[in-house]
Image (cartoon, rainbow, N blue to C red; front, side, top):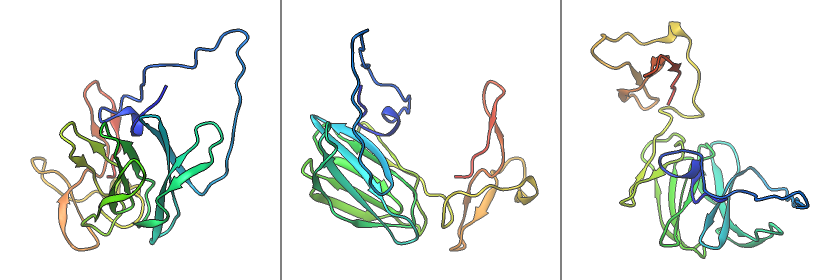
Length: 195
């Protein structure tokens, strides 16, 4: 049972074929390893990759290829800039390369963890992971203001007409559409979105 990206892919179904296939006489063995903020592991072919990061406004990230049984590091990208932190995500692509988005940086790595491309994303805010579309494009979103998403009280709602979406002003002064209170969803449920 393996995933090649966060939540099992761009549809975020959180499902992967497979299973543990345990029988009455099966035995599980657990291996543990301490590391600084392990975000996720993904499989790329026959390689297991681990995404880690530090914290704060000038955080770093690292991607490691790890042994699937011992969890020992086989190779690592070393520390790379991430910026204002949000855990982000990692995906292994069919061609063997990897994408990572952590904080405000996006990376593409070879299967041997060489940096093939990197880009500082345009807003000085953390970005909330990504999905990779079938054509290879990355889709991501920032939190719209520095630091992790914050809750808003109903009294914090911006004024807007019913025909226009609510807006929020970022720390850089730009306005953009952004839901800031519960919105009705099909089926009668509601959720709060702050990003």
